[in-house]
Length: 292
Image (cartoon, rainbow, N blue to C red; front, top):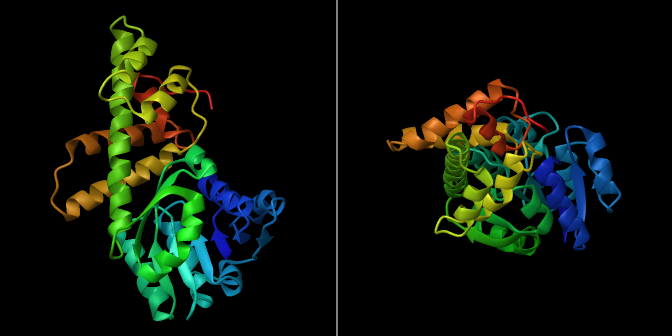
């Protein structure tokens, strides 16, 4: 199976590499073309523009940083729309809002192409291990065609119906994740400032009803002040903002998410945005510097 892949950031590079290792023929593009070379070493070919990738491949996947980037790759000069058409499918796996997804979907369909939104739950390690959870919505026939790729990229894929449902589900999931990270950070700070061992708190949490993989993975690194970015904090804050906007649209009160968003915004103001989202701990413990 041949696919195009647009966007080789932390997630996209790991996902494209996984497809290559499992025998897929992959043509890649990234705004900074030099980032393609690691994939070329694994057997990828390079497209000079998004349009060139779409022209070559029946199916093209995008994994981009935010709604602005997702729209740019589609609508700008040499973008996806210049070559999408009958018999071609475009799969956007970026985390964006439902309105952005709908705008891209309408444009692709007007050109005769098929569109699927398929944001993922999971960060760098699940992407590398093919253990993402894929939240797809849109063209069901395209979803069925993409299942062989999704089976490589993830441990489970869900088809959620009409366009927008995948985007909304991803924002809800990331809103919960961001709120949980803030709660963990506050708990570690409270334990430390109360004369308790934060590590012992992590051990206790891991044995109780609220044990979860995120606390187990992130907690020890947080105590060391180590925030190598599996999921950059600036992207987590973007997702909190989009989730809160979704809450506004549906008149849903979200005080916990709103408070968590403020902590992530504070972390960004302290120039922690490129670190892992767990670096919000530096804000909640009263810090502001960290070890990358």
